[in-house]
Image (cartoon, rainbow, N blue to C red; front, side):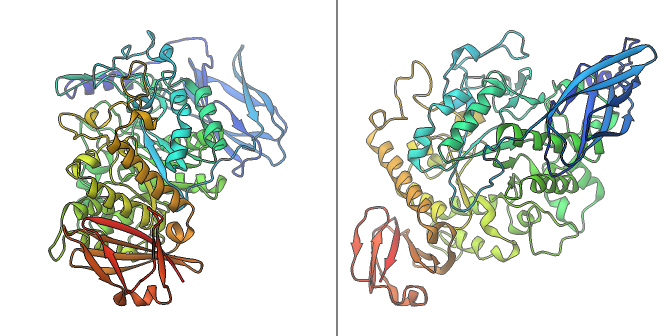
Length: 622
């Protein structure tokens, strides 16, 4: 692929416009709305010799300000303004070239009142799933003969398995029972990608990160209408919808790349250049320009061409698409893939555009770094960086590593609970660390239960930390039923089908009857703690006070004016009697406590008995 790709790409960039009668075959965005706070709109008009036409629009309140012609005569970009009070309806986009007149209808819709742009708060518990691997409600859309990848085969871990959006909708009650308040799925937009040969195995783009059309939900998931139906069902449950954005790159089979508007629509290199995947040159004050350029402009992989967001037409296209998706599918928050590889001024502009239309919108990007300073760079922070990010949230990879290392270790000056303690102690660098999204695993990591050696005590302790610390916790599908595995030999091992989501499954883990005793114990543990967290403001949004870990114990409090919750963990293999005198600053005046997981009431708070390898969540009472 790397040797062939420059030739293939050169062919795309040197296409000559064939002498054809001008026409319009596509306009993006596919529609827009009246009543938006931002009055400007840029239409990308595509068709044979569409760039040779002279355009006019006659519709009350709509003004064509400027027409941009570009390198490829099959494109024109039209700058419009929509005046306040413009009515919903359709207008004719008219293009003329001599005696040729081309017309295309364009719709301005009225905005609906469905909840959207609600953002996320610390009261939320986000559930991440892969639609292809969760549940298949309609085998009729598993594969299509007119798509680049025509296969669907559950016997292969690398191919599509047929899960769809209706399958997700059918199990929202399961998520609700677990205590989930927000649904995040890996991307649902069209990935009409050919299979790729990776490591000698042919692999499908079932994960969704190679878009081929930003205005179409993949029909193997059910298409746009299935996504709208799922969104309505999610909101009817009182839950919120998170969409996964990919701005850095597109799939090699993207429709635009078959007839590209500009040479610099993508990042260009004399020969194929991959990103180094190194984040250090971006923030390093001593870094070389070439190292920064390779990190940011190098391609993620050969089959995911890298978009040039410094091209203003590319930037407008991506930003308007984010708003279009939010409005069309009632999206509440955005997770942003490969955040640190994007042009950061572009990301600020995109974030600001979403915030302008949806002030409560939360964006949380994936910047896979291993230290607090680099992580802070990509969100609102208090560090004197030359560039200031306006991202409202971010995925907390630094705490993720600390939670896993902390639960696996014990003893030592820096080990065990000292890991998360030390990371939380650095929260002063953020404007608001509570907007960070915390986690124990995701679709790109080893399964958490396997990482802790299938030790249920460690599983419960880390889960307790996740659901009682600051931030917005997210959960990876199936961990509540102890799904396990490592990425070896491939990512597919940590992306297995949810048992019971597919016809012919021998077990149905969506029901208590289909789960083993250990699985039900894990499910109940997560369910109890997640629902308690959701209903306890002191826990999910109160202040936090933590005490230095001592003797393999770690204690912290979440509190507000109306309640105090104490979290105490013991990583020793023997019980400990915890002397509460040390915690009088926060525990003084309380005489008893209720165990949030068992309901047991402790009537003497002079000492608290911590069983071996256990986490206690205690609601303090007077």
